[in-house]
Length: 135
Length: 112
Image 1 (cartoon, rainbow over the protein chains, first blue to last red):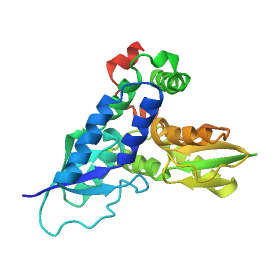
Image 2 (cartoon, rainbow over the protein chains, first blue to last red):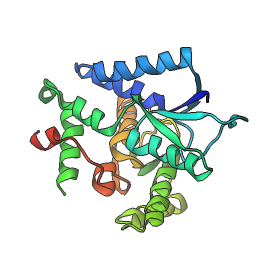
Image 3 (cartoon, rainbow over the protein chains, first blue to last red):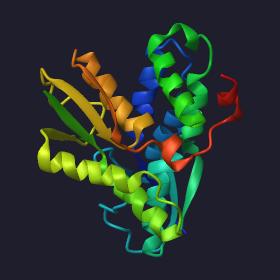
Image 4 (cartoon, rainbow over the protein chains, first blue to last red):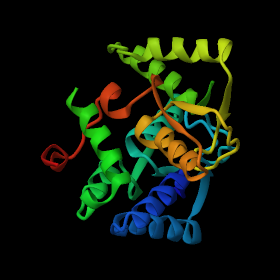
């Protein structure tokens, strides 16, 4: 069966990569995901779900023949999972394609890498996350 | 004077439906949805679909709400601030992935 990759909210990965770079942090994990998405676009059949689209909807034409669906993009626990459920509601099982997925854990753990403490923006984001997590 | 920026309100609804379907506690979500409804009815607001873009840079303070706080809402705050707009996250109308949905974070986070 042919593979079809649905890339959800790639803009989030690009935006957060820019944030990491602006903070002087390594963007390697994001670079790897973005490289994989670029490879998918070049070598596989892909469909993109832009950030302006609600991931609980399926705003694209489904293929007429059965496909093996894979999901990629960001963030795994939020919009990608939501889109996975939306597809399951119409009887399509879509598998997470790990090399092309950014997770919330990746986002948080990347922000924690030194020299994070020297960046006011990163400190603000992280301290608010930490306070929320401890409530 | 304040104006509200609504970011991805549909995600709050999605999480509401998801939790109802699973029979799990809704936590703050009904209150958040009620507050968003009040904002739409009684306050000045504008809606943002792409949170990394600034479609409207008002002179008054902007209270950013919607979902998810740590991601798209925060992203809109950063975008607005880069344009010199005074803004902050409005918690009463915002869904937090970590606090409200209790998504797991890596253990290193606890050591930070």
